[in-house]
View 1 (cartoon, rainbow, N blue to C red):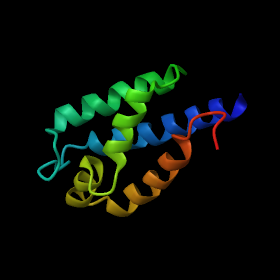
View 2 (spheres, one colour):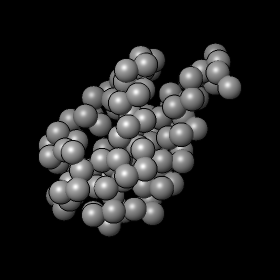
View 3 (cartoon, rainbow, N blue to C red):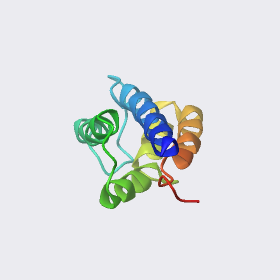
Length: 104
């Protein structure tokens, strides 16, 4: 039970930092599937759910996995915006946090 809360807290922390990064004025989404405002809105929606301590349903979890996937929209945005190295660290944290509570 505390594992799920811990994972949710870590997921919220990762999403909060990603929201800060995509919220920059100089964010470049040219190589992603999103316009800057769309990406900000998408991340903001997931962040609001994580901060409210609601569990993410499987469609939300899958959508986040796609966003954080190698060569996905977030990585492409990170590379073109100059924060690729930080993205890799955030993606590693995300991979640990997205594991379902009670699962292996």
